[in-house]
Structures are given as structure tokens and as C-alpha cells.
Length: 274
Image (tube, rainbow, N blue to C red):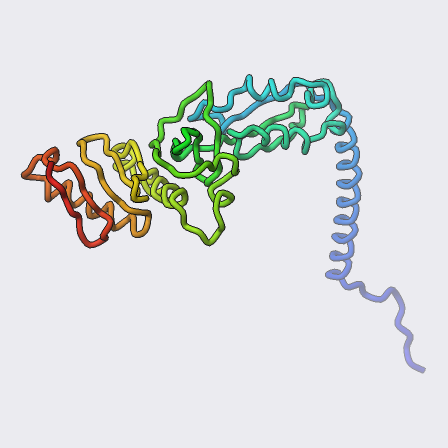
């Protein structure tokens, strides 16, 4: 008769180790969910103790929006979060209220573990100041959005005068004209963007002007010439030609001998003497 094997069957140690690890991870996940739920309930019941306002990452370069302005916008029982449970605070309402300020580009509201409600605000950055033929005045920011003038702060940006039409009723450059249109306003916007991205031109150009022919002119800080650009097409080449003229053409001559520098045609700069 065959001999019977006595004792237990051998256990696969690798399988047993994997099984114990799976049990441990399952317990850890369950405990995490339980603790997270408890912590979430406790945080929801936490009462807002204070408000912190951060403008432009704590280093505001502009003065359109101040902490006092934000507190003024929160000056009502439904909007003031202090004293309310975090779960009862309408974050969307607060963000929309701050964003309704024409000088605010973005606003984010969130709460900290200790019950503080934090307002993270970014101001709009004006690119130029428009004065149109109806003497309407407003800023256009770097995103093409219109901004009203402020009684509290004046931005040091180029001024654009002689702009035709009444446009401030619109909210932005894109809304003031059809998307496929390239009007005087859009040309001014593109020229101002280019100027703002260059330290040299940003310090040199103080004014843009739309003349009676519809051409855009630049008024420099140094020199009394009128610089005719025409429009924003090939603005990089046009201003490069002007820079070469400054560095070489006027090197041995007096700039002030000339009253007009015409850059409408990309491959040439036509200078008119006084």
C-alpha cells in the first residue's frame, strides 16, 4: 500500500505576504476615509475668525485696488464672512463680488485650516490710456479689456489721442469691433503691446496719435519729431529701422533738424526737415 503523507501542505510565502499587505492597505484606506470625514466635519463647523487680503501676490505695483476697497465691498451681512461657519460661506458670491470691480482681473477666495478666509486678488494692468474724439477717457489693459479712470490712482502709460468713435460702452477691444476686423483701436492695442515689452521703447514713447488720415503717429520723449507708423503691421521691422536711424543716421546730425520720420513703408524711413 502507498505510504500516506502526514502533516500540513506547504504555504506559498510570497502569496501570504501579498495577502497581508492587501489587508494592511485596505485598513489604512478605511481609516483615512474615516479620519478625513471627521476632519471635514470639524472644518465645516469652524467659524471664520478673520480675513486676509493678498493683492498681486503681496507686492502690488499698482494702486487701483486697496485692502480698504475690498473691505468696503464686503461691508454687508451676506458678504462679510467673519463669524460665519466655513460651510455657510458662499465662496462663489464673494469671488463674483470682487471680480465685479473693473480694476480686478482675477479673484480667488479660499479658507485656511485655522478659519481664516483669504482673498487672493490680481489687478488689471493698464497698457495705454485712450482719449477719443469725444473726449471719453479710459484705459485698455494688457488683455484688451477697457478700464475706467480712477480718482485714486493714475497709471504711467502712453496716451492715445484722436481715436475715432465712441467705444467705452463696449467692454473690450474684441467687443468693440468684429473679430475679423483690424480697426484703428486694434492697431493701437497691438502697437502698445509691442512698446510695453521693450524697456527702450517703453521709456521713449509717451504718446500715440491718430491723425486726420487715419495713420497712427508716435510722439517720443526725446526729440520733437512726429513718427508716422501708419498701423501695427510689421511693427517690429518699423521700429528696428527707427532704432538704426537713431544709432547711425542721426549719429552725425542733429535729430531736431527733422520734423517728421515716416515709417509707413517697412523698408525705408523718410525724414522731413523742418
